[in-house]
Amino acid sequence: MNKLTVRLQFREMLGEEKYIKFLSLLIDGKGKRLLYWQEKAWERFQKKFDYPFSDYEHLLSIFEYCHVHNVDLQEDTVEMVYGTVIPPSKSEQEKIEMLYPHVNLVAYGPCWEEDKKKTKIKFCHKCREVYALEKEVKRRR
Ligand SMILES: [Zn+2]
Image (cartoon, rainbow, N blue to C red; front, side, top):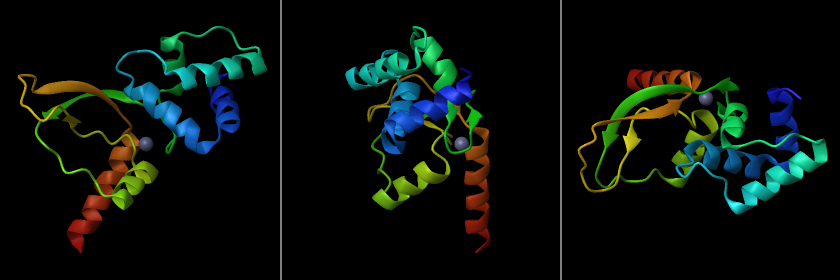
């Protein structure tokens, strides 16, 4: 089973909303381990398709991609932003998730300042293109 098929079948099994949740938790996964429901979902998939055992790294190699643009994520080093950030409104958040979920132009730290000025993140180059285009359109209005 190649990774495109795994993505498709797993998406179909979980349903769109849960699948996207699974991906974003995996990609942001600081603890490098799955949550209980993720483990169960993946186990179910393995059983159903007789898929071999897979560790976290293997799952990342399959699912570390942008589900909106269907391209693999790339690594970048970006500025850290500290302090209290006003979270986007619900409609803004929905727009981000639909158009450019992996734009990641900066990384957000805690509300106190730390020494670390830059950090490594994963991003989607298509997400950044769409985001830049949107800004350009806004600027011209
Ligand atoms: Zn993208």
